[in-house]
Length: 327
Image 1: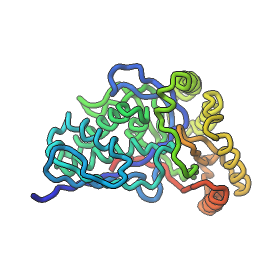
Image 2: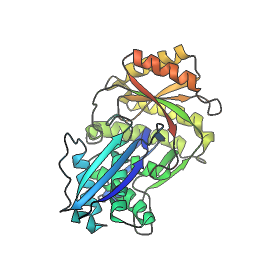
Image 3: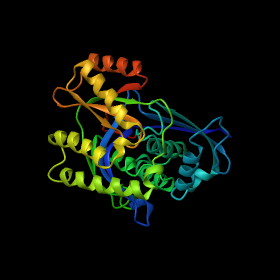
């Protein structure tokens, strides 16, 4: 019988600060309050192609498929909404333009794009499939102790403020109690990271001491951010509170992140740009942001900074703020 195929792509997401909120017994209502950016390099951060042949809902054998658990969990969770997904065995090909487990929201992006690609292969109506993808991806992230707010952020797009934890209501019957909003502008950024595998998010959010420090610091900074409207006028607050969170939560002193920031400050100085470096939570990575949205970061300056990061043993790439996160 002829195979069925589907494709989808998702942006990545950088979290600048957050507060763990995972006490609700319902996974769809767990998550975080926080802020961040939805991002893409020139191509979408994560692209998925699925091919299905009649079977029993399993993933076809693939060599060194490090996303096997996540992808199978997506299939199993999606089956509660779309039972026909279990009528096929699936070959799932994933291509990512940013590294996994480095604070770029790749597990959320992979879950979202996989869920949508599967439904497109099965011929689900597009609007319904879109909403179901966010619902499923959020549940999958919580099942695997992954990102607490990346899926919600990607629902809003742009520069996100997650006011209340959980998946937002994505349709009349899907989603949860999350409240998130976002704004968009033309914004180019530079991300840099250590080229090695770092801790999984669960290493922090499943540790009570880290969870308490993160929650207390995050809530303190969010008191400022939740006041007033959420738009580009808050740029200064975004830069200030993200730095305050990194310091107060003590995440800056873990996993060699202080050294990362010192390297970034040196690179910024050499390039002579009006910018500041901010940690991407919870990787060994950072983002270079302009101190003024109006001035931004010039392409030639970013190329110079990429060369400097490479010479200091870090990987780096230019990314842009994105509004349409799942397509």
